[in-house]
Amino acid sequence: MTIGFIGGSGIYEALPLRETRDVDVETPFGEPSAPLTVGEFGDTGREVAFVPRHGPDHSYSPTTLPYRANIFALKQLGVTHIIASNAVGSLREDLPPQTLVIPDQIYDRTKHRELTFFDEDVVVHQPFADPYCSELAEILADAAESATDADVAREGTYVCIEGPQFSTRAESEFYRAQGWDVIGMTTIPEAKLAREAEIAYATVAGVTDYDVWKEDSQVTLEEVLENAEKNEVAIKETVEAAIRAIPDDHDCDCHDALSGTINTPDAAIPESTKADLAPLLGDYLG
Image (cartoon, rainbow, N blue to C red; front, side, top):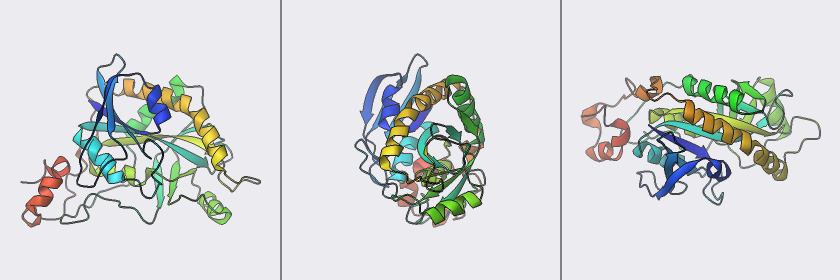
């Protein structure tokens, strides 16, 4: 079993990885955010592959991130489960900064992102009613509650905005009025692409601020970074416990997500496309 982790370098560097190596992976969608770091997790014998979402120097914006290359590269390395971490703002009074949230739903407000691997030559209609792997999310929530002292919220809707600007007050109030829980910029299209790649995907979101709906809240980068750093310890403890807790034989519906979703006849798909997308479609096409 190889487990992928997408997040910040600070959390990854604190994980007990041994015999690490950097792997350059070529994909049909360009280069990942950085070479993937692969290592053995503690004494478990499990392999973990890490990709820094925004690059090693945080040089990619939420819009320009090479999401497709990141997920495709993890798939090529044999990753079956992805644990992600996100910094988010809170849309609820009872979810203060330094709370950990394990969301179960997403509302997509992005506008300029590539949302699928299948935008040329082959059409795939992927069900996405439950955007996170419920089984992996439960493992994450159990890990957060058992391994940390943080307050943990099971479930919640993550509204994903385009960024890189934070919300206006009108937008923030609108999101609150819908009953949504946290706001961030990076879970889309990661969750969609992971599902298309038949990888179980869930995230632990660390609350850094109250967005701008709360009186006197401006949401500054200084505030976000300060609370993100405080959240790192709890997120690291959660990720470490979750990696240990995933059963060796864990299988779920995510791992067969493409079954019955390919709408284009096999004969109509160019051989070059089949070759490019073989890590995704190889089990389904002739």
